Image (tube, rainbow, N blue to C red; front, top):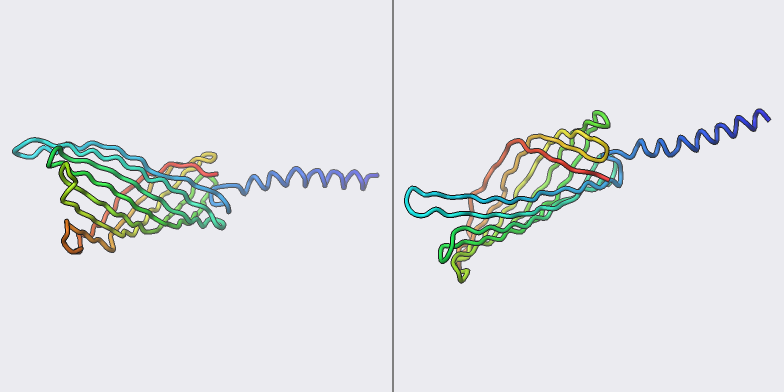
Length: 202
């Protein structure tokens, strides 16, 4: 009887401990974890030249994306982007539409459950087409391939996180076409600085 009671006690202990252990491993970086992310932007810029009238540039953009942990701490995914801007008015009005995509990968280095380093790397392709005038003449098309690195330190609370870290972006290919002219090489840009991030995972 005593042996039976001990076996029942052990069985109940294992049964209750099992879900707890399963819950413990469900953290940022666990396999099959989704990390949605994105950016939304809107701004208005006023340009006042030394002479003549000023002009406004209005921009709106959206960049939704997602990362998925295919194995422990290794995530794959990417973003798509859409942006639209207008400058000036009448025959001097310029409208621009940008489309792009950016596959990337990330690896999570966990110091504790609430503090991790999550560097990501990838590249982006973006194409921008700008047209001038009321009849949309004077088309300018630009395409750019950019390599991107971001190394944020993340602070987690439950299924949410916030972080900050350095980033580096540099163009490896940039082409431009003005009107009916042949496509030519364009300026290649390099950007670096500090960027913040906020998100959730499930």
